[in-house]
Length: 205
Ligand code: GAR
Image (tube, rainbow, N blue to C red; front, side, top):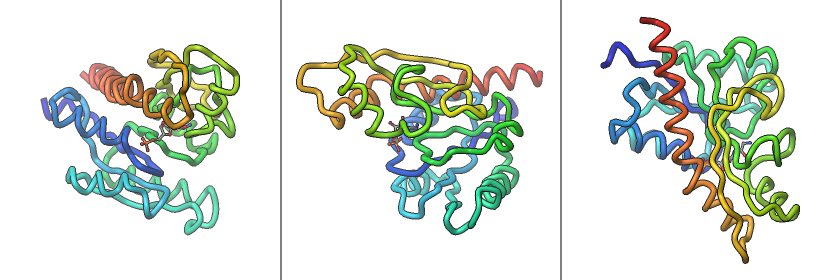
C-alpha cells in the first residue's frame, strides 16, 4: 500500500551493484514498504548514478572535496534527505565515514552492507576489495556479508542479517568479491531494507 511506504535514500560511491539489487527487488514487487526517493553519490563519476537515472530515481552528487569539510559534506547530504523525504538511509558501497553527530541524528535509520562476517575483517580501513584480500591472506574457510545498523563505531552497529559464503581453492580477491556479492550482498541488502521499513511502517500504524 502506497501510504505504508517508508522513504529511503541510497548513498553510493562506485559501481552500484547493490543499488541495482535494490532497484531490481523493488521492480519485482519485493519491497512493498520501501519508496526509493533518491540516490546520493559521493563521486561524480560513479556508475551507480547511471543505474539510478535508468530506474527513474532522482540522483545527486554530494562530494566531500567540493564541500570542503565533513560538516558541509554531511549538511549537503541532510539537505537532500529532507528534500526527498527519506527516513531510511542505505549505505550501498558508500566509501565515506559518517561522523558521530550524523549517525546520532539517525539512530537505527542507517543501514550498511559490509562484505565480511562482522566482527571479522571490518572497521576502519576495511572496505571493498581490501576486505577480501585480508580474508584470503588470513586463510579463513568461510566469509560472507553483513547488513547492520550504522552508529558511531565503523561497522559496529547492531547486526540485522548475515550470510556465509565458502572460500574456494584458487579464489582471488576479485573472484571472492563477486561471489560474496552474488550469493550474499545482493540478497541480504534488499531483504534487510524491506524488514527495516516494514518495522517502521508498523510502528506508525
Ligand atoms: C560492496 O562489496 C560493498 O559491500 C562494499 O563495497 C562494494 C560496493 O559495490 N562496501 C564496503 O566495503 C563498505 N565498508 P557496489 O558499488 O557494486 O555495490
